[in-house]
Image 1 (spheres, one colour):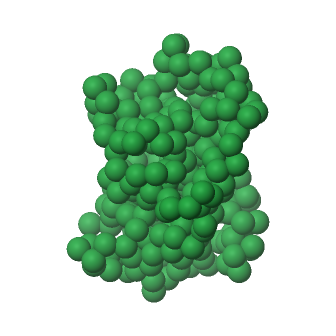
Image 2 (image 1 turned 90 degrees about the vertical axis):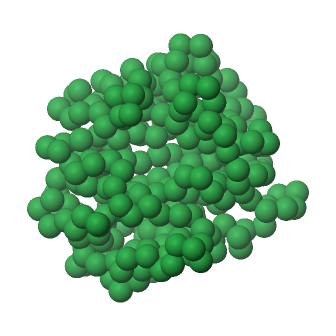
Image 3 (image 1 turned 120 degrees about the vertical axis):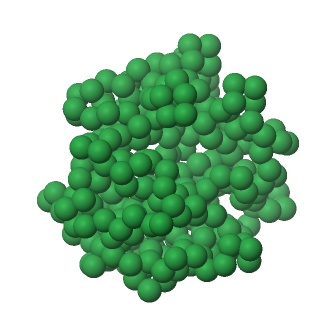
Length: 278
């Protein structure tokens, strides 16, 4: 069952989303050469506490930290620790969430640490982020879940990969519903699968965490012995971008973007819904 939210509940999710945006801003600034991933986790913990929110990552299924810090070939669910020291040229995905009055926010971004990044890594992140926005723009009343998947996949497949070949759209992980829990129905693939059919129809009150994960090589992953860290099976580096989005009567509202997604959606010819907290 898909949880449909009222405007008042979406406003609460917007509050949680803005906490996530604040976590992103603080950890992006802290992701510098010499910092450890544990340092970033401590930054996130302080932001959550300062906003009177709760972490939805800490303790989730036994996860031991406040954020996920996934470096280079780690796709998702990297565990912050004191021994992973960031260095020039690294790429890190920071996935963060927060809870306000029982309502969840969840979003991720890819950051470049220091300098010396290969052009193909910069393009990988751009393609992944833009595919997320293509999926967000497809959140329209009357569309179905598969239309969001198709928009993400179509954007990625149309981008030429430096050096040839194709980007790997990670198959084992995808987006999800969000609301009174962090992960809810429906599961959102980042590609179209005939086995999954069209999925539910999108209606006002429908909320999704849209999160493409893309690698420079394989779409396949494996989980390390810590039962959390997910890496590409061929060791190629990856990118991960995510926003939580609510579909309202007036269009999509990007709950975890500071401006509600207004500027980026305008570039795509879509009008973002008004911010309920403005």
